[in-house]
Image (tube, rainbow, N blue to C red; front, side, top):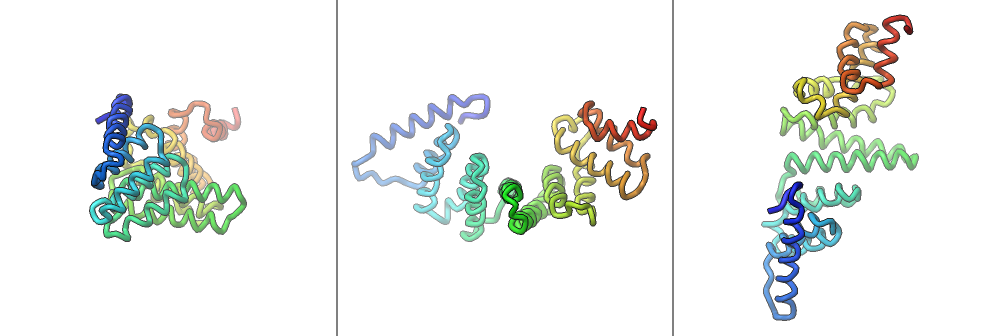
Amino acid sequence: MGNKTDTAAFTKGYKAINKFFQKTADKNFKYIAEDYKHKGSLLSKTGKDSLGVVELQKAIDLDPTKNCELYGDIGKIWVKAKKYDKAIDSYEKKPTCGKNLGGQDLYDEGRAYYFLAAIKQKEKKETEAMDLFTKADTCFSKLTRDKPTYPLGYFWKAKAEVQLDAKNEKWLAKPDYEKALELVKSEERAANKANVIDACGYLGYYSVKQLKDNEKAKPYWTIVKELDPNNEKANVFFKSLTGGK
């Protein structure tokens, strides 16, 4: 029953379940799926991700119908380990056994597609990258449909759209960044600092570039400057209002 502030409990749990498996080895003991499920979970929580996946897969193999949701757990492990292709494979398996992807699944699968797309971009594989960004956008679209008051869904959908509209020909990310900011209260901005800065920077730039309206841009760049006083783009904007002074 450990948590982020009591990780020692995970270690104790792993030692206990490992002892259980040691004592039952070579005794024709009939393990049940939950044995492997808990061992896999504890391995993952103690930093042994790949070993944890092996045990979780054993749980699935023993009772595919009951434990199909564990593909989501496996996917989350692979995202954490930055093995994005393996994460995607796990999330794609979950619906094949009758389990829909939940909100957390869609969020993590979308990010797996997004981060893998970024890797492909660095490798100069633009066609593959755009296909993956499109799939990320699809995941986040489903997430915003299922969880319409969850701001991170809109922030990440917008991030994918920024990549799909790199030259701002359609300003695809505008509606989603606006919705995300609408859902984040002013007192919550600091906790969502990076995302809020991205959103306000985008909308501030849109107001200047597309609308030619500095007054509409000003509130966005004000928020950016409040969160990051040294933000170069915000400072450039405010200097432009005073003629560079």
